[in-house]
Amino acid sequence: MTIDNIFTIKSYNDLGFMVGGLKRRLLILIEAQSKWSTNVIIRIWEYVIDTLMSYFINNGDNLYEGAKVEMPDIETYVVYTGKSIPRLFSNLDKDDMGRYILSLNKEFFEGKTGQPELLAKVIYVKNGSGILEEYIRFSQIFDEQMSKYKDDDEKTIQEIFKICSDENVMKDYLDAHRGEVEKIMRAIVSPEYIEKAEQKSAEIRGAIKMGKLFGGSDEDIKNYLIIQFNLTPGYAQNWLDAVAEEEEDNVVEENNIYA
Image (spheres, one colour):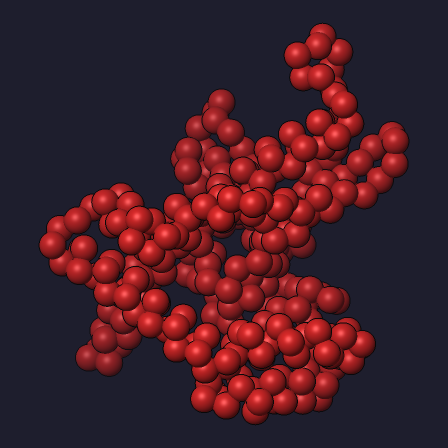
């Protein structure tokens, strides 16, 4: 049920699938985040609506008829692959298994009655299990080695496979699909790709800081990022949130130094 879009300006989800039979079906949507953004719950909300509309169309269901259509049960998840746990997590509720719950209503409507609600369970390094735990660790290994050997793509790839093999992280999958995984990695870890990506990141950070220096509002800066760097609205907002959190972390670190 993963959404495919031919228009690059529109966001699309990471993974969606449906299980079940004729009596009851379960729709599961999953988003992966290497950097935390509360706005992910809004994107998931959009994906739920888009996926349900496709589901009804494919089933030939008519939403304008008197007969009530059958809805699948819905579960949504955020897989957070970052190493450090964002301070924002402390504001989230937890389920019976200790997993953080991201609430659309609580985050954006202050828990008001009558406003939309969608809950997403957050899976991260401390509560992941099975293949998801391995995926989170693989993502961390990948980021670590890219940072360590960014001038040597062959060394980066070799170390990623070696560490994953030593730690038994997605070992069977990587052994079975090494060729295609290496092909993807070479495109991602090439010096040209990294240089271009880092240059764009620096330009975006510079634009945000310059905009704030001259008193621009977040909305004005976001609109500038969308136009200047061809970002989606969600990605532009993620950049604003990320830079804000980086600045907050720097302030905390400086206070600790001088304390």
